[in-house]
Image (cartoon, rainbow, N blue to C red; front, side):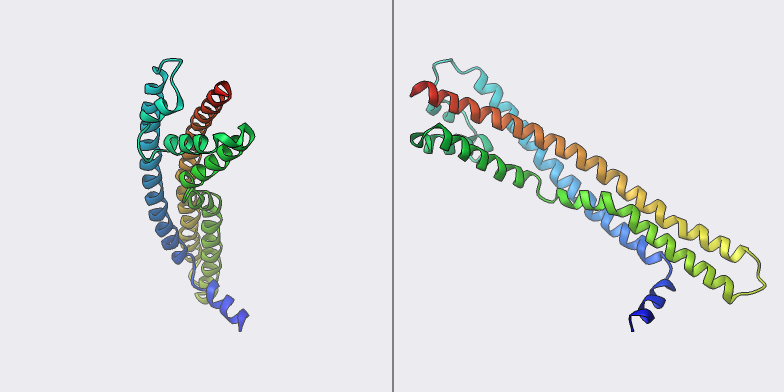
Length: 206
């Protein structure tokens, strides 16, 4: 039963693989645009807030800093966590900061796994389409004896398209994943520095 299915699969050629790759490329494009908009907006908001906070006087308190934070922003959530756990001591506040940063990173990296998966596997999916296309090309050659090598050469050329499509899909996925991951790391570094600054302020006030 399973062998029969495999035989039928090999006779389909690689056309369906190309359509699969084209479908996944649309999905990848949607993820790239959506994540890019979210991360760039976060960069703009966070950068503007940090620039504003840099102009705060040295004697400013955490309450003063919180007034300059955008409602619902990552920095505000960090400030709330730090201030709400201040009475428990610096080690507890630092642990809470790490937890908050992990949650924020998880939110920013949402759906980036799709890009990483497609970037790593699209070439292999394309290669599968090529292999299936080659099998069908030789099958057609055997079924059309006497028609010359043109039959198999045409089939091989069509089969190689699947590999090319797989590579074309993979390249922007890998590039976008690396770029977005770098932007997320930059955001988290700034947020961590902000949180550490608040913790230092708590320690100095103690």
